[in-house]
Length: 394
Image (cartoon, rainbow, N blue to C red; front, top):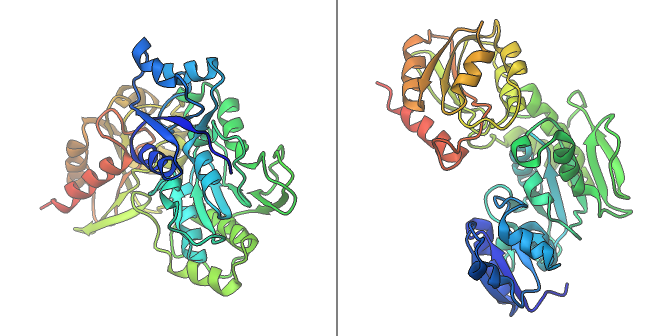
């Protein structure tokens, strides 16, 4: 596809650096900018620019983005650029929860690279994948805000539950961003959605799934939510041409992903599980439901505008004790008033307290229901620290 002669890339972390490299390989003049841009000198980066590529962490109201829109300079997400530079069919996976697990499972089934919101940036695969080969791309609502021609041949929506309300402002706006994954699909493409979900844009054929669907094999990864992820992956893999044998092997062998119900250690009869990727209430509910054992639950971080009421309902009678950390500790304590809990403050004290209280047969579960940005760089750093603390237990 035709690219502009000059561009600005805003946000120079993983996806931004990959976008710069992909543009420069094609002779585009590129100016890179960090996230904090707003004075007149910095806005002058847009002088003569024909495109702004925005990293997903940059909000839509950032000064340089707002100025680009005022000047009618197109604003693309990095996955939009990836779609335009790669000569490959894309299988896109979105949803509130389960995106990474389902994307990686599909990558294993299809022997395809996985990019986007997980691992490598999509544009980082430029020149590394044979033309025509499938690429699985995990896409977030932040990435989908700024797509234009992005057209996955197969697109999967796993679920829609409140998340990122602090950024999108409302559930309707969040859901609208998610549904954009389908809007450019054409006849011959496939939209994979939960059975009974309507209001899907685009012209693709609908293919539905449910957690109770028969599968070519039962998934190795635990939890009812993971059986639902496996059902979605099965439908999507079939749409991409995978055989039943390939799907069955992937379901039987795929071990799951880091930071999502990851068993770190069994110590003194207690299982320690890293579910740091559970950055919203719905994800934490899945974590709680995955274990039929007494739970010591570590919660907290930076709240995302959600109510913790459903979390309290799920914890009542299931959680022996909760350990509250980070900025949301007070809000969580109020919601969990009739659930045994303590304000641990930070992860180290929470792990130490849970280890002291948990009896053999129990599970210590880090499933925070919050973002990590108050105390950690991201959920991965938080999960890594949990692993370190658990492995250091005497």
